[in-house]
Image (cartoon, rainbow over all chains, first blue to last red):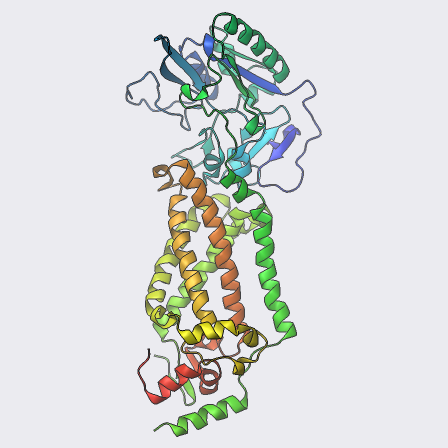
Length: 300
Length: 213
Protein backbone atom coordinates (compact mmCIF):
# COMPACT_ATOMS: atom_id res chain seq x y z
CA UNK A 1 0.00 0.00 0.00
CA UNK A 2 2.49 2.59 1.17
CA UNK A 3 5.30 1.37 -1.02
CA UNK A 4 3.25 1.86 -4.17
CA UNK A 5 3.62 5.61 -3.78
CA UNK A 6 7.13 4.98 -5.13
CA UNK A 7 8.54 8.02 -3.36
CA UNK A 8 9.80 6.50 -0.09
CA UNK A 9 13.07 8.10 1.00
CA UNK A 10 13.22 6.45 4.42
CA UNK A 11 11.63 3.22 5.64
CA UNK A 12 11.89 1.98 9.24
CA UNK A 13 13.96 -1.13 10.06
CA UNK A 14 14.92 -1.63 6.43
CA UNK A 15 18.47 -2.08 5.20
CA UNK A 16 17.78 -2.14 1.45
CA UNK A 17 16.52 0.86 -0.58
CA UNK A 18 12.76 1.39 -0.79
CA UNK A 19 11.04 2.23 -4.10
CA UNK A 20 11.98 5.88 -4.62
CA UNK A 21 11.85 6.51 -8.36
CA UNK A 22 9.31 9.30 -7.92
CA UNK A 23 10.74 12.41 -6.32
CA UNK A 24 9.31 15.65 -5.02
CA UNK A 25 10.66 17.82 -7.82
CA UNK A 26 8.43 20.75 -7.02
CA UNK A 27 10.01 20.85 -3.56
CA UNK A 28 9.33 19.43 -0.13
CA UNK A 29 6.09 20.46 1.52
CA UNK A 30 5.62 22.27 4.81
CA UNK A 31 2.82 23.42 7.03
CA UNK A 32 3.42 26.79 8.61
CA UNK A 33 1.57 27.54 11.84
CA UNK A 34 1.63 31.23 12.67
CA UNK A 35 1.06 31.12 16.41
CA UNK A 36 0.73 34.93 16.46
CA UNK A 37 -2.40 34.76 14.28
CA UNK A 38 -4.09 31.89 16.14
CA UNK A 39 -7.30 32.73 18.03
CA UNK A 40 -7.67 29.30 19.63
CA UNK A 41 -10.98 28.44 17.97
CA UNK A 42 -10.05 24.76 17.61
CA UNK A 43 -11.51 24.56 14.12
CA UNK A 44 -8.32 22.73 13.11
CA UNK A 45 -8.99 20.09 15.75
CA UNK A 46 -12.52 19.64 14.46
CA UNK A 47 -11.42 19.50 10.83
CA UNK A 48 -8.85 16.85 11.78
CA UNK A 49 -11.54 14.80 13.51
CA UNK A 50 -13.89 15.14 10.53
CA UNK A 51 -11.47 14.34 7.75
CA UNK A 52 -9.83 11.46 9.58
CA UNK A 53 -13.08 10.23 11.18
CA UNK A 54 -11.69 10.34 14.69
CA UNK A 55 -13.74 10.75 17.85
CA UNK A 56 -11.94 10.99 21.17
CA UNK A 57 -13.73 10.25 24.41
CA UNK A 58 -15.37 13.20 26.10
CA UNK A 59 -12.93 13.92 28.91
CA UNK A 60 -12.99 16.13 31.97
CA UNK A 61 -11.84 19.72 32.41
CA UNK A 62 -8.18 19.81 33.33
CA UNK A 63 -8.32 23.45 34.44
CA UNK A 64 -7.24 24.94 31.14
CA UNK A 65 -8.71 25.38 27.68
CA UNK A 66 -6.78 22.32 26.48
CA UNK A 67 -9.49 19.93 25.37
CA UNK A 68 -8.90 17.01 25.24
CA UNK A 69 -6.16 17.21 27.85
CA UNK A 70 -3.60 15.45 25.67
CA UNK A 71 -2.92 13.95 22.28
CA UNK A 72 -4.19 10.40 21.82
CA UNK A 73 -4.77 7.79 19.14
CA UNK A 74 -8.00 9.72 18.43
CA UNK A 75 -6.58 13.24 18.80
CA UNK A 76 -3.81 13.87 16.31
CA UNK A 77 -3.68 17.61 16.80
CA UNK A 78 -4.36 19.67 19.89
CA UNK A 79 -4.40 23.36 20.79
CA UNK A 80 -2.25 23.92 23.86
CA UNK A 81 -2.96 27.12 25.79
CA UNK A 82 -0.24 28.82 27.84
CA UNK A 83 -0.48 32.04 29.84
CA UNK A 84 2.66 34.16 29.74
CA UNK A 85 3.32 37.31 31.68
CA UNK A 86 5.76 39.59 29.88
CA UNK A 87 8.43 41.58 31.77
CA UNK A 88 6.24 44.65 31.12
CA UNK A 89 3.42 42.98 33.02
CA UNK A 90 1.23 42.22 30.03
CA UNK A 91 -0.57 38.91 29.81
CA UNK A 92 -0.07 36.95 26.61
CA UNK A 93 -2.20 33.97 25.75
CA UNK A 94 0.05 31.72 23.72
CA UNK A 95 -1.83 29.08 21.77
CA UNK A 96 0.15 26.42 19.99
CA UNK A 97 -1.33 23.79 17.73
CA UNK A 98 0.54 20.66 18.82
CA UNK A 99 1.03 17.60 16.65
CA UNK A 100 3.63 15.76 14.62
CA UNK A 101 6.38 18.06 13.36
CA UNK A 102 7.33 15.74 10.45
CA UNK A 103 11.07 15.98 11.18
CA UNK A 104 13.54 15.68 8.33
CA UNK A 105 15.46 13.32 10.63
CA UNK A 106 12.61 11.51 12.44
CA UNK A 107 13.44 9.96 15.83
CA UNK A 108 10.37 7.72 15.62
CA UNK A 109 11.52 6.19 12.36
CA UNK A 110 15.04 5.70 13.69
CA UNK A 111 13.74 3.85 16.75
CA UNK A 112 11.08 1.73 14.99
CA UNK A 113 11.99 -2.00 14.81
CA UNK A 114 9.15 -3.01 12.45
CA UNK A 115 10.06 -2.91 8.75
CA UNK A 116 7.93 -0.36 6.95
CA UNK A 117 5.83 0.70 9.94
CA UNK A 118 7.13 4.25 9.53
CA UNK A 119 8.02 5.80 6.19
CA UNK A 120 9.16 9.20 5.02
CA UNK A 121 7.99 10.36 1.62
CA UNK A 122 10.11 12.44 -0.75
CA UNK A 123 7.91 15.45 0.04
CA UNK A 124 9.02 15.18 3.70
CA UNK A 125 5.86 13.76 5.27
CA UNK A 126 6.55 11.14 7.95
CA UNK A 127 3.74 8.58 7.92
CA UNK A 128 2.91 5.61 10.12
CA UNK A 129 1.83 2.47 8.26
CA UNK A 130 -0.19 0.87 11.03
CA UNK A 131 -0.57 -2.46 9.20
CA UNK A 132 3.13 -3.04 9.91
CA UNK A 133 3.13 -1.58 13.44
CA UNK A 134 3.88 -4.09 16.21
CA UNK A 135 2.86 -1.78 19.07
CA UNK A 136 6.19 -1.71 20.90
CA UNK A 137 6.11 2.06 21.49
CA UNK A 138 9.74 2.61 20.45
CA UNK A 139 8.50 5.54 18.29
CA UNK A 140 7.42 7.26 21.51
CA UNK A 141 10.88 6.60 22.97
CA UNK A 142 12.53 8.05 19.87
CA UNK A 143 10.33 11.14 19.33
CA UNK A 144 11.86 14.43 20.58
CA UNK A 145 8.38 16.05 20.65
CA UNK A 146 6.32 13.44 22.57
CA UNK A 147 3.81 12.93 19.76
CA UNK A 148 2.97 9.28 18.93
CA UNK A 149 0.30 7.52 20.99
CA UNK A 150 -0.53 3.81 21.16
CA UNK A 151 -4.21 2.90 20.85
CA UNK A 152 -5.55 0.92 23.78
CA UNK A 153 -7.96 -0.68 21.32
CA UNK A 154 -5.70 -2.07 18.60
CA UNK A 155 -2.22 -1.51 20.13
CA UNK A 156 -1.03 0.46 17.10
CA UNK A 157 0.74 3.82 17.15
CA UNK A 158 -1.04 6.86 15.70
CA UNK A 159 -0.19 10.47 14.97
CA UNK A 160 -0.82 13.28 12.50
CA UNK A 161 -0.33 12.13 8.88
CA UNK A 162 -0.09 15.72 7.60
CA UNK A 163 -3.15 14.48 5.64
CA UNK A 164 -0.82 12.51 3.36
CA UNK A 165 -3.97 11.17 1.67
CA UNK A 166 -5.08 14.73 0.80
CA UNK A 167 -1.62 16.02 -0.06
CA UNK A 168 -1.09 13.01 -2.33
CA UNK A 169 -3.97 14.23 -4.55
CA UNK A 170 -3.03 17.89 -4.48
CA UNK A 171 -5.13 19.12 -1.55
CA UNK A 172 -3.92 20.93 1.53
CA UNK A 173 -4.28 19.29 4.99
CA UNK A 174 -7.74 19.53 6.57
CA UNK A 175 -6.57 21.82 9.38
CA UNK A 176 -5.13 24.25 6.83
CA UNK A 177 -8.34 24.28 4.80
CA UNK A 178 -10.47 25.16 7.78
CA UNK A 179 -8.34 27.74 9.63
CA UNK A 180 -10.45 30.95 9.67
CA UNK A 181 -7.60 33.39 10.36
CA UNK A 182 -5.07 32.00 7.92
CA UNK A 183 -2.81 31.11 10.81
CA UNK A 184 -2.14 27.73 9.19
CA UNK A 185 -0.84 27.73 5.65
CA UNK A 186 0.56 24.98 3.46
CA UNK A 187 2.84 24.83 0.46
CA UNK A 188 6.41 24.12 -0.55
CA UNK A 189 8.89 24.45 2.28
CA UNK A 190 10.69 27.28 0.47
CA UNK A 191 7.47 29.24 -0.01
CA UNK A 192 6.52 28.73 3.61
CA UNK A 193 9.89 30.01 4.80
CA UNK A 194 9.50 33.07 2.63
CA UNK A 195 5.99 33.67 3.93
CA UNK A 196 7.29 33.25 7.48
CA UNK A 197 10.05 35.78 6.84
CA UNK A 198 7.46 38.39 5.84
CA UNK A 199 5.37 37.64 8.91
CA UNK A 200 8.44 37.88 11.19
CA UNK A 201 9.40 41.23 9.69
CA UNK A 202 5.89 42.48 10.38
CA UNK A 203 6.00 41.18 13.97
CA UNK A 204 9.38 42.82 14.61
CA UNK A 205 8.01 46.14 13.39
CA UNK A 206 5.27 45.79 16.03
CA UNK A 207 7.74 45.33 18.89
CA UNK A 208 8.20 41.55 18.94
CA UNK A 209 11.97 41.77 18.65
CA UNK A 210 12.50 38.05 19.18
CA UNK A 211 9.90 36.90 16.69
CA UNK A 212 11.23 34.11 14.55
CA UNK A 213 10.74 30.87 12.67
CA UNK A 214 10.78 27.53 14.47
CA UNK A 215 12.40 25.05 12.07
CA UNK A 216 14.77 23.25 14.44
CA UNK A 217 17.97 22.12 12.74
CA UNK A 218 18.73 19.55 15.46
CA UNK A 219 16.24 17.24 13.72
CA UNK A 220 17.29 18.42 10.25
CA UNK A 221 14.45 20.96 10.13
CA UNK A 222 10.76 20.10 10.26
CA UNK A 223 7.91 19.99 7.77
CA UNK A 224 5.63 21.62 10.30
CA UNK A 225 7.03 24.99 11.29
CA UNK A 226 5.91 27.69 13.68
CA UNK A 227 6.11 31.47 13.60
CA UNK A 228 6.67 32.41 17.25
CA UNK A 229 6.57 35.85 18.88
CA UNK A 230 9.25 34.62 21.30
CA UNK A 231 11.41 32.34 19.19
CA UNK A 232 14.15 32.65 21.81
CA UNK A 233 11.87 31.09 24.43
CA UNK A 234 10.17 28.16 22.67
CA UNK A 235 9.50 26.58 26.06
CA UNK A 236 6.84 29.23 26.74
CA UNK A 237 4.62 27.51 24.20
CA UNK A 238 3.53 24.54 26.35
CA UNK A 239 7.07 23.21 26.63
CA UNK A 240 8.09 23.29 22.98
CA UNK A 241 11.77 22.21 23.05
CA UNK A 242 14.17 25.03 22.16
CA UNK A 243 16.72 22.76 20.51
CA UNK A 244 15.14 19.37 19.87
CA UNK A 245 17.32 16.52 18.67
CA UNK A 246 17.23 12.76 18.71
CA UNK A 247 18.44 11.74 22.18
CA UNK A 248 22.03 10.50 22.31
CA UNK A 249 20.75 7.39 24.08
CA UNK A 250 18.41 6.63 21.17
CA UNK A 251 21.25 7.37 18.74
CA UNK A 252 23.52 4.91 20.54
CA UNK A 253 20.79 2.29 20.91
CA UNK A 254 19.81 2.46 17.25
CA UNK A 255 23.13 3.45 15.73
CA UNK A 256 26.49 1.69 15.87
CA UNK A 257 25.34 -0.62 18.67
CA UNK A 258 23.16 -2.66 16.36
CA UNK A 259 25.73 -3.93 13.83
CA UNK A 260 28.54 -4.06 16.42
CA UNK A 261 26.53 -6.14 18.89
CA UNK A 262 25.43 -8.55 16.18
CA UNK A 263 29.01 -8.87 14.99
CA UNK A 264 30.26 -9.50 18.53
CA UNK A 265 27.65 -12.23 19.08
CA UNK A 266 28.70 -13.93 15.85
CA UNK A 267 32.37 -13.54 16.79
CA UNK A 268 31.75 -15.21 20.17
CA UNK A 269 30.09 -18.18 18.49
CA UNK A 270 32.81 -18.33 15.84
CA UNK A 271 35.46 -18.18 18.58
CA UNK A 272 33.97 -21.27 20.20
CA UNK A 273 33.84 -23.09 16.89
CA UNK A 274 37.46 -22.27 16.06
CA UNK A 275 38.56 -23.28 19.55
CA UNK A 276 36.95 -26.68 19.07
CA UNK A 277 38.59 -27.10 15.68
CA UNK A 278 41.98 -25.88 16.92
CA UNK A 279 42.31 -27.11 20.49
CA UNK A 280 39.68 -29.83 20.53
CA UNK A 281 37.44 -31.21 23.26
CA UNK A 282 38.42 -31.54 26.88
CA UNK A 283 37.91 -35.24 27.53
CA UNK A 284 38.19 -37.43 30.61
CA UNK A 285 40.82 -40.10 30.02
CA UNK A 286 41.12 -43.64 31.38
CA UNK A 287 43.91 -42.34 33.63
CA UNK A 288 41.54 -39.81 35.17
CA UNK A 289 39.00 -42.55 35.92
CA UNK A 290 41.77 -44.73 37.39
CA UNK A 291 43.09 -41.84 39.49
CA UNK A 292 39.59 -41.15 40.76
CA UNK A 293 39.22 -44.81 41.78
CA UNK A 294 42.59 -44.80 43.56
CA UNK A 295 41.54 -41.68 45.45
CA UNK A 296 38.30 -43.43 46.43
CA UNK A 297 40.18 -46.47 47.75
CA UNK A 298 42.39 -44.22 49.87
CA UNK A 299 39.37 -42.78 51.66
CA UNK A 300 38.00 -44.80 54.55
CA UNK B 1 14.26 -40.33 40.93
CA UNK B 2 17.32 -40.68 38.82
CA UNK B 3 19.01 -43.99 39.43
CA UNK B 4 22.68 -43.31 40.08
CA UNK B 5 24.75 -46.19 38.72
CA UNK B 6 28.11 -47.42 39.97
CA UNK B 7 30.94 -45.11 39.01
CA UNK B 8 28.63 -42.11 38.77
CA UNK B 9 27.98 -39.09 40.94
CA UNK B 10 24.71 -37.20 41.09
CA UNK B 11 25.56 -33.58 40.22
CA UNK B 12 22.10 -32.13 39.64
CA UNK B 13 18.89 -33.59 41.10
CA UNK B 14 15.82 -33.77 38.86
CA UNK B 15 14.22 -30.56 40.19
CA UNK B 16 17.38 -28.56 39.45
CA UNK B 17 17.62 -30.00 35.97
CA UNK B 18 14.01 -29.14 35.13
CA UNK B 19 14.55 -25.68 36.59
CA UNK B 20 17.68 -25.22 34.47
CA UNK B 21 15.87 -26.21 31.27
CA UNK B 22 12.98 -23.84 31.97
CA UNK B 23 15.57 -21.05 32.18
CA UNK B 24 17.41 -22.33 29.10
CA UNK B 25 14.33 -22.70 26.88
CA UNK B 26 12.90 -19.34 27.92
CA UNK B 27 16.31 -17.79 27.30
CA UNK B 28 16.40 -19.15 23.74
CA UNK B 29 12.86 -17.90 23.08
CA UNK B 30 13.75 -14.51 24.54
CA UNK B 31 16.94 -14.23 22.52
CA UNK B 32 15.11 -15.08 19.28
CA UNK B 33 12.16 -12.76 19.87
CA UNK B 34 14.43 -10.05 21.27
CA UNK B 35 16.88 -10.16 18.37
CA UNK B 36 13.88 -9.88 16.03
CA UNK B 37 13.18 -6.47 17.55
CA UNK B 38 16.86 -5.56 17.84
CA UNK B 39 18.10 -5.72 14.26
CA UNK B 40 16.12 -5.38 11.02
CA UNK B 41 18.10 -8.23 9.45
CA UNK B 42 16.64 -10.55 12.11
CA UNK B 43 13.04 -9.31 12.05
CA UNK B 44 12.03 -12.53 10.27
CA UNK B 45 12.59 -14.33 13.57
CA UNK B 46 9.33 -12.74 14.74
CA UNK B 47 7.50 -15.10 12.36
CA UNK B 48 8.47 -17.92 14.74
CA UNK B 49 6.23 -16.25 17.30
CA UNK B 50 3.29 -15.50 15.01
CA UNK B 51 4.39 -12.16 13.56
CA UNK B 52 5.70 -8.83 14.82
CA UNK B 53 2.81 -7.85 17.08
CA UNK B 54 2.56 -11.26 18.80
CA UNK B 55 6.35 -11.36 19.09
CA UNK B 56 6.24 -8.00 20.87
CA UNK B 57 3.37 -9.08 23.14
CA UNK B 58 4.80 -12.47 24.11
CA UNK B 59 8.44 -11.48 24.73
CA UNK B 60 7.96 -9.78 28.12
CA UNK B 61 5.82 -12.63 29.49
CA UNK B 62 8.53 -15.15 28.65
CA UNK B 63 10.89 -12.72 30.36
CA UNK B 64 8.86 -12.96 33.55
CA UNK B 65 9.02 -16.77 33.37
CA UNK B 66 12.79 -16.67 32.93
CA UNK B 67 13.29 -14.17 35.74
CA UNK B 68 11.30 -16.28 38.21
CA UNK B 69 12.91 -19.55 37.10
CA UNK B 70 16.39 -18.05 37.25
CA UNK B 71 15.73 -16.72 40.74
CA UNK B 72 14.76 -20.22 41.93
CA UNK B 73 17.83 -21.73 40.26
CA UNK B 74 20.11 -19.04 41.68
CA UNK B 75 18.73 -19.69 45.16
CA UNK B 76 19.92 -23.28 44.79
CA UNK B 77 23.39 -22.62 43.40
CA UNK B 78 24.39 -19.14 44.60
CA UNK B 79 26.17 -20.43 47.74
CA UNK B 80 28.35 -22.77 45.73
CA UNK B 81 29.27 -19.87 43.46
CA UNK B 82 30.86 -17.65 46.09
CA UNK B 83 34.32 -16.72 44.82
CA UNK B 84 37.20 -18.06 46.92
CA UNK B 85 40.93 -17.43 46.72
CA UNK B 86 41.52 -20.63 44.76
CA UNK B 87 38.92 -19.47 42.20
CA UNK B 88 40.75 -16.23 41.56
CA UNK B 89 43.96 -18.22 41.17
CA UNK B 90 42.06 -20.47 38.72
CA UNK B 91 40.89 -17.44 36.74
CA UNK B 92 44.42 -16.04 36.60
CA UNK B 93 45.61 -19.26 35.00
CA UNK B 94 42.55 -19.86 32.84
CA UNK B 95 44.76 -19.64 29.74
CA UNK B 96 46.00 -23.14 30.64
CA UNK B 97 42.41 -24.38 30.81
CA UNK B 98 41.58 -23.00 27.39
CA UNK B 99 44.66 -24.79 26.02
CA UNK B 100 43.39 -28.08 27.53
CA UNK B 101 46.08 -28.13 30.24
CA UNK B 102 43.67 -28.21 33.13
CA UNK B 103 46.22 -30.13 35.23
CA UNK B 104 48.22 -26.89 35.63
CA UNK B 105 45.50 -24.92 37.42
CA UNK B 106 44.42 -25.01 41.08
CA UNK B 107 41.77 -27.57 42.01
CA UNK B 108 38.18 -26.40 41.62
CA UNK B 109 35.28 -26.97 43.97
CA UNK B 110 31.74 -27.69 42.78
CA UNK B 111 32.22 -24.83 40.34
CA UNK B 112 35.44 -23.38 38.97
CA UNK B 113 36.31 -19.69 38.89
CA UNK B 114 35.16 -19.28 35.31
CA UNK B 115 31.79 -20.85 35.97
CA UNK B 116 31.33 -18.69 39.01
CA UNK B 117 32.12 -15.47 37.18
CA UNK B 118 29.73 -16.45 34.37
CA UNK B 119 27.06 -17.17 36.99
CA UNK B 120 27.41 -13.76 38.60
CA UNK B 121 27.57 -12.04 35.23
CA UNK B 122 24.36 -13.77 34.18
CA UNK B 123 22.70 -12.92 37.49
CA UNK B 124 23.63 -9.26 37.07
CA UNK B 125 22.34 -9.22 33.49
CA UNK B 126 19.12 -10.92 34.55
CA UNK B 127 18.40 -8.34 37.24
CA UNK B 128 19.12 -5.40 34.94
CA UNK B 129 17.15 -6.97 32.08
CA UNK B 130 14.20 -7.51 34.40
CA UNK B 131 14.26 -3.92 35.68
CA UNK B 132 14.81 -2.29 32.28
CA UNK B 133 12.32 -4.69 30.71
CA UNK B 134 9.60 -3.63 33.12
CA UNK B 135 10.30 0.02 32.32
CA UNK B 136 9.96 -0.49 28.55
CA UNK B 137 6.95 -2.85 28.86
CA UNK B 138 4.65 -0.45 27.04
CA UNK B 139 1.41 -2.31 27.75
CA UNK B 140 1.75 -2.09 31.52
CA UNK B 141 4.45 0.15 32.94
CA UNK B 142 5.99 2.60 30.45
CA UNK B 143 3.41 5.29 31.15
CA UNK B 144 4.72 5.59 34.72
CA UNK B 145 8.26 6.53 33.71
CA UNK B 146 9.69 9.79 32.33
CA UNK B 147 11.04 9.70 28.78
CA UNK B 148 14.70 9.84 29.89
CA UNK B 149 14.30 6.67 31.96
CA UNK B 150 12.53 4.99 29.03
CA UNK B 151 15.42 5.81 26.71
CA UNK B 152 17.99 4.62 29.23
CA UNK B 153 15.91 1.48 29.82
CA UNK B 154 15.79 0.73 26.09
CA UNK B 155 19.54 1.15 25.77
CA UNK B 156 20.28 -0.91 28.90
CA UNK B 157 17.90 -3.66 27.86
CA UNK B 158 19.61 -4.05 24.50
CA UNK B 159 23.10 -3.86 25.99
CA UNK B 160 22.62 -6.36 28.80
CA UNK B 161 20.74 -8.71 26.49
CA UNK B 162 23.79 -8.60 24.24
CA UNK B 163 26.09 -9.37 27.20
CA UNK B 164 23.82 -12.20 28.36
CA UNK B 165 23.67 -13.74 24.88
CA UNK B 166 27.48 -13.72 24.66
CA UNK B 167 27.74 -15.20 28.17
CA UNK B 168 25.22 -17.89 27.24
CA UNK B 169 27.18 -18.78 24.10
CA UNK B 170 30.29 -19.22 26.25
CA UNK B 171 28.29 -21.26 28.78
CA UNK B 172 26.85 -23.56 26.09
CA UNK B 173 30.17 -23.93 24.32
CA UNK B 174 31.90 -24.87 27.58
CA UNK B 175 29.32 -27.64 27.97
CA UNK B 176 30.07 -28.94 24.49
CA UNK B 177 33.83 -28.58 24.85
CA UNK B 178 34.17 -30.22 28.26
CA UNK B 179 32.91 -33.71 27.44
CA UNK B 180 30.61 -35.30 29.98
CA UNK B 181 29.13 -31.97 31.14
CA UNK B 182 25.91 -31.99 29.16
CA UNK B 183 25.00 -35.31 30.78
CA UNK B 184 25.05 -33.57 34.16
CA UNK B 185 22.13 -31.43 33.00
CA UNK B 186 20.28 -34.06 30.97
CA UNK B 187 20.60 -37.14 33.19
CA UNK B 188 21.98 -35.52 36.30
CA UNK B 189 25.13 -37.59 36.69
CA UNK B 190 28.84 -37.33 35.96
CA UNK B 191 31.53 -39.98 36.08
CA UNK B 192 34.09 -40.22 38.91
CA UNK B 193 36.80 -39.39 36.42
CA UNK B 194 34.94 -36.24 35.27
CA UNK B 195 34.57 -34.99 38.83
CA UNK B 196 38.22 -35.88 39.53
CA UNK B 197 39.49 -34.07 36.49
CA UNK B 198 37.37 -30.93 36.54
CA UNK B 199 36.22 -30.44 40.13
CA UNK B 200 38.75 -32.31 42.24
CA UNK B 201 38.12 -30.43 45.46
CA UNK B 202 34.39 -31.15 45.11
CA UNK B 203 35.16 -34.82 44.39
CA UNK B 204 37.24 -35.05 47.57
CA UNK B 205 34.57 -33.35 49.64
CA UNK B 206 32.01 -35.86 48.39
CA UNK B 207 34.15 -38.96 48.82
CA UNK B 208 35.56 -37.99 52.20
CA UNK B 209 32.25 -36.74 53.40
CA UNK B 210 33.79 -33.49 54.63
CA UNK B 211 31.32 -30.65 54.90
CA UNK B 212 31.11 -28.31 51.92
CA UNK B 213 32.27 -24.82 52.39
